[in-house]
Image (cartoon, rainbow, N blue to C red; front, side):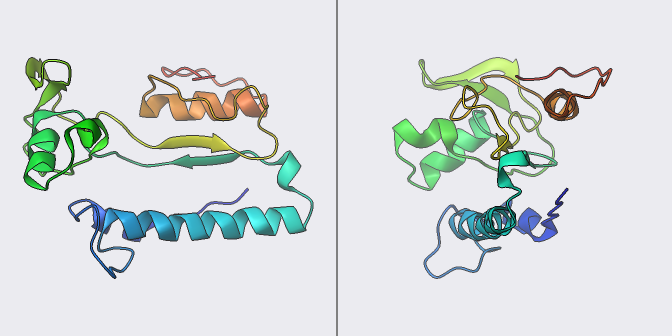
Length: 166
Protein backbone atom coordinates (compact mmCIF):
# COMPACT_ATOMS: atom_id res chain seq x y z
CA UNK A 1 0.00 0.00 0.00
CA UNK A 2 1.24 3.47 -0.86
CA UNK A 3 -0.21 6.50 0.87
CA UNK A 4 0.63 9.96 -0.38
CA UNK A 5 -0.71 12.67 1.89
CA UNK A 6 -0.28 15.99 0.15
CA UNK A 7 -1.29 18.54 2.77
CA UNK A 8 0.30 21.42 0.88
CA UNK A 9 -2.38 21.06 -1.79
CA UNK A 10 -4.92 22.66 0.53
CA UNK A 11 -3.09 25.92 -0.11
CA UNK A 12 -4.35 25.93 -3.70
CA UNK A 13 -8.00 26.30 -2.69
CA UNK A 14 -8.27 30.00 -3.38
CA UNK A 15 -5.53 30.19 -5.97
CA UNK A 16 -6.03 31.24 -9.56
CA UNK A 17 -6.39 28.54 -12.18
CA UNK A 18 -3.16 29.59 -13.86
CA UNK A 19 -0.34 31.96 -12.99
CA UNK A 20 2.80 32.10 -15.13
CA UNK A 21 5.85 30.49 -13.48
CA UNK A 22 3.91 29.68 -10.30
CA UNK A 23 5.01 27.20 -7.67
CA UNK A 24 2.78 24.17 -7.15
CA UNK A 25 0.93 25.76 -4.23
CA UNK A 26 0.34 29.03 -6.08
CA UNK A 27 -2.13 27.96 -8.77
CA UNK A 28 -4.25 24.96 -9.70
CA UNK A 29 -2.45 24.30 -13.00
CA UNK A 30 1.01 23.86 -11.45
CA UNK A 31 -0.51 21.95 -8.55
CA UNK A 32 -1.83 19.35 -10.98
CA UNK A 33 1.48 19.21 -12.85
CA UNK A 34 3.25 18.40 -9.58
CA UNK A 35 0.66 15.76 -8.69
CA UNK A 36 1.20 14.23 -12.13
CA UNK A 37 4.94 13.98 -11.38
CA UNK A 38 4.26 12.24 -8.05
CA UNK A 39 1.91 9.74 -9.68
CA UNK A 40 4.42 9.05 -12.45
CA UNK A 41 7.08 8.29 -9.82
CA UNK A 42 4.76 5.88 -7.97
CA UNK A 43 3.74 4.11 -11.19
CA UNK A 44 7.35 3.88 -12.40
CA UNK A 45 8.45 2.42 -9.06
CA UNK A 46 5.68 -0.21 -9.17
CA UNK A 47 6.37 -1.11 -12.81
CA UNK A 48 10.12 -1.48 -12.21
CA UNK A 49 9.42 -4.00 -9.48
CA UNK A 50 6.77 -5.88 -11.47
CA UNK A 51 3.93 -4.91 -9.11
CA UNK A 52 1.90 -2.60 -11.34
CA UNK A 53 -0.38 -5.32 -12.79
CA UNK A 54 -1.40 -6.26 -9.23
CA UNK A 55 -2.01 -2.66 -8.14
CA UNK A 56 -5.12 -0.58 -7.68
CA UNK A 57 -4.35 3.10 -7.45
CA UNK A 58 -6.95 5.18 -5.61
CA UNK A 59 -6.75 8.95 -5.70
CA UNK A 60 -9.16 10.88 -3.55
CA UNK A 61 -9.52 14.20 -1.86
CA UNK A 62 -10.66 14.89 1.66
CA UNK A 63 -12.93 17.65 0.41
CA UNK A 64 -13.71 19.22 -2.87
CA UNK A 65 -14.19 22.62 -4.32
CA UNK A 66 -17.42 24.22 -5.37
CA UNK A 67 -18.38 23.34 -8.92
CA UNK A 68 -21.68 24.26 -10.45
CA UNK A 69 -22.83 26.75 -7.84
CA UNK A 70 -23.63 30.40 -8.41
CA UNK A 71 -20.52 31.58 -6.51
CA UNK A 72 -18.16 29.45 -8.63
CA UNK A 73 -19.85 30.49 -11.87
CA UNK A 74 -19.84 34.17 -10.93
CA UNK A 75 -16.17 33.98 -9.89
CA UNK A 76 -15.33 32.17 -13.13
CA UNK A 77 -17.05 34.86 -15.18
CA UNK A 78 -15.07 37.55 -13.33
CA UNK A 79 -11.84 35.66 -14.11
CA UNK A 80 -12.72 35.40 -17.80
CA UNK A 81 -13.38 31.66 -17.91
CA UNK A 82 -15.15 30.84 -21.22
CA UNK A 83 -18.87 30.03 -20.83
CA UNK A 84 -18.42 26.46 -22.10
CA UNK A 85 -15.82 25.78 -19.36
CA UNK A 86 -17.75 27.19 -16.38
CA UNK A 87 -19.29 23.83 -15.44
CA UNK A 88 -15.79 22.56 -14.59
CA UNK A 89 -14.49 25.73 -12.98
CA UNK A 90 -13.92 25.23 -9.27
CA UNK A 91 -14.03 27.75 -6.49
CA UNK A 92 -13.10 27.29 -2.87
CA UNK A 93 -15.20 30.12 -1.53
CA UNK A 94 -15.05 30.59 2.19
CA UNK A 95 -17.84 30.23 4.72
CA UNK A 96 -20.65 30.76 4.83
CA UNK A 97 -21.20 28.32 1.99
CA UNK A 98 -24.56 29.83 1.14
CA UNK A 99 -24.64 29.14 -2.55
CA UNK A 100 -27.13 27.70 -5.04
CA UNK A 101 -26.78 25.08 -7.75
CA UNK A 102 -26.36 26.62 -11.20
CA UNK A 103 -28.62 25.61 -14.10
CA UNK A 104 -26.23 25.68 -17.07
CA UNK A 105 -29.03 25.23 -19.62
CA UNK A 106 -30.91 28.29 -18.34
CA UNK A 107 -27.68 30.07 -17.36
CA UNK A 108 -28.92 31.07 -13.92
CA UNK A 109 -28.92 29.96 -10.32
CA UNK A 110 -31.65 27.61 -9.15
CA UNK A 111 -33.46 27.83 -5.83
CA UNK A 112 -31.76 24.58 -4.68
CA UNK A 113 -29.05 25.28 -2.13
CA UNK A 114 -25.62 23.77 -2.58
CA UNK A 115 -23.97 24.99 0.64
CA UNK A 116 -21.05 22.60 0.39
CA UNK A 117 -18.52 21.12 -1.95
CA UNK A 118 -20.55 19.12 -4.42
CA UNK A 119 -17.71 17.20 -6.07
CA UNK A 120 -14.60 15.59 -4.75
CA UNK A 121 -11.85 13.89 -6.64
CA UNK A 122 -12.00 10.10 -6.70
CA UNK A 123 -9.95 8.36 -9.35
CA UNK A 124 -9.42 4.61 -9.62
CA UNK A 125 -6.56 3.37 -11.77
CA UNK A 126 -3.83 0.79 -11.73
CA UNK A 127 -2.79 -2.27 -13.61
CA UNK A 128 -5.25 -4.48 -11.71
CA UNK A 129 -8.26 -2.39 -12.77
CA UNK A 130 -10.40 -4.30 -15.24
CA UNK A 131 -10.33 -2.83 -18.75
CA UNK A 132 -14.13 -2.44 -18.74
CA UNK A 133 -13.73 0.22 -16.01
CA UNK A 134 -10.79 2.07 -17.57
CA UNK A 135 -11.67 5.50 -18.93
CA UNK A 136 -15.16 5.51 -17.42
CA UNK A 137 -16.68 8.48 -15.64
CA UNK A 138 -18.98 7.95 -12.70
CA UNK A 139 -21.79 10.49 -12.87
CA UNK A 140 -22.68 10.44 -9.18
CA UNK A 141 -20.84 9.50 -6.06
CA UNK A 142 -20.22 10.87 -2.61
CA UNK A 143 -17.23 10.83 -0.31
CA UNK A 144 -18.94 8.09 1.75
CA UNK A 145 -18.72 5.86 -1.33
CA UNK A 146 -14.89 5.77 -1.33
CA UNK A 147 -14.51 3.02 1.27
CA UNK A 148 -17.17 0.64 -0.10
CA UNK A 149 -15.74 1.04 -3.63
CA UNK A 150 -12.22 0.23 -2.48
CA UNK A 151 -13.49 -2.68 -0.38
CA UNK A 152 -15.43 -4.13 -3.33
CA UNK A 153 -12.38 -4.04 -5.61
CA UNK A 154 -10.29 -5.64 -2.87
CA UNK A 155 -12.89 -8.38 -2.33
CA UNK A 156 -13.68 -7.27 1.22
CA UNK A 157 -17.20 -7.23 2.69
CA UNK A 158 -17.68 -3.74 4.09
CA UNK A 159 -21.11 -2.74 5.46
CA UNK A 160 -21.46 1.01 5.04
CA UNK A 161 -23.90 3.85 4.53
CA UNK A 162 -22.11 4.48 1.23
CA UNK A 163 -22.17 2.29 -1.86
CA UNK A 164 -19.62 1.09 -4.35
CA UNK A 165 -19.59 3.24 -7.47
CA UNK A 166 -18.60 0.24 -9.63
